[in-house]
Figure 1: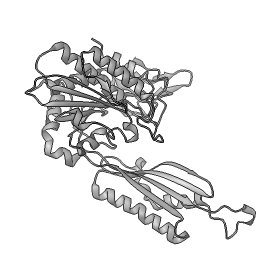
Figure 2: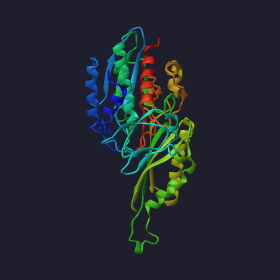
Figure 3: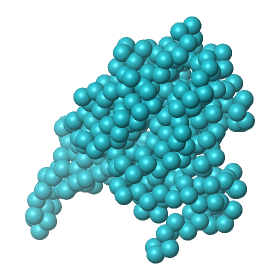
Figure 4: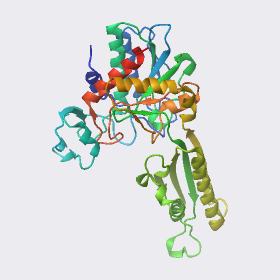
Length: 401
């Protein structure tokens, strides 16, 4: 039997970074390489219906007791575009509380002073990178834990629920649930294994929207520009200042929402700002979007109609209202987490998961921890011991009836 760590180290060797600018599904074809490897591995575990569809989604079934619920376990294969996922150099280091040198040549250190979460992990073995790429625990840890749990169930026998396995592409660019076959998946309910800190369970998340601001200007030679030039870059900066500075990600936490300027490009003639808008509370979420519309109106009144164009597209909504009628699904997970020794914490997700959208499609789908920390960055790490405990949690969910 392969350990969860062995699986994880193999999976992170695949570069599966998704691309938010792509119009294909999956957004990057390299995600299919990991998908194909997972299908082959599942077949070796005796999962006869293991398959990958044309869009790169992976499905399979571990049959169980027909009198028990059919439970889905879902994780995503892609990694974030925020940092490179190519040529990941992962290694295991014992953590004793001292600074961890990730890269002697470049003098890159993982320090408790920078990342206080390390305090919880003294005495554990951390899987880290060389400080030049992300690790990919989001969400290859989830994949490894699901696969290890499935193999454990198959080997130990005994009574367990039927397990529906689903691995998705493009979660990191908000498209993981776009082509997920909920009806064909056939689960009564599911869990995304896509969380972070050990013991956390999430059944509420941000309402989310993407916004694009396009500002039109007029370029004139600066030597004769007086009274004529309209610099779109300056107007774009003015628009950004109309949104409350206190509602930026760097000033918010918990249930507080934000406006996040993710990208800006521009010249005198035209500038483009990309925002993501987030809030757990639906009313506050709608107010944030209305604030952007109002700011756009102010700019157009000041500089002339058509100066600024604003488009806002909703991405996903808070899954809590879909989960509340099915709190037994949450309670089952919490009980399993406690039985394997986790301190259970309700943690509202300051982001989104495939489970949020799948819950709205009729598949209740709370999110479970994987044990990882510092996702989407070069200082990402995950303790071996926490991954092993997450495997036990999944087995307990599937067997404790």
